[in-house]
Image (spheres, protein in one colour):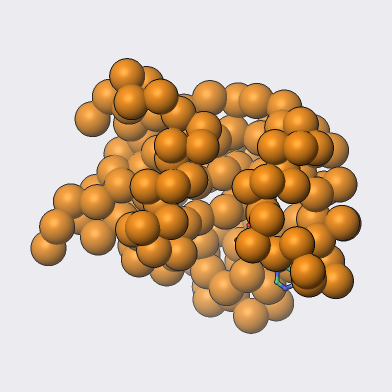
Length: 140
Ligand code: CMP
């Protein structure tokens, strides 16, 4: 299986509850290495642009408000099959549907405040990584 990179965000509900370390431990225990990471305050324009694909959805405005409501930790995770592995580890978008042991089952508060974001494909991972990181910041 190929070594891949995926983009991850630890969202404001999780940074607010000091869960960054616990979530990072789950990544590392499951074969995902954190090869880039920074804690930032997203601007409204940044959040609107990042989630632009959802602009027509009814939850878009609330989603942007939530993502700028506090700091986030943006990350690049590397490992075998990293995109699918991270999606399995995160669990379903809605924590009510997330499997036992997944990050969202363990920590998410709601479908909006769902603690983590992860890329849904290798193509989108490359786009999302480039949106937040310069090449020199990725240290594999
Ligand atoms: P994420 O993987 O970051 O991608 C889009 C986000 O929109 C999603 O996680 C959820 O946090 C958020 N969201 C809020 N409401 C909904 C909804 N009804 N359906 C899907 N996603 C939602």
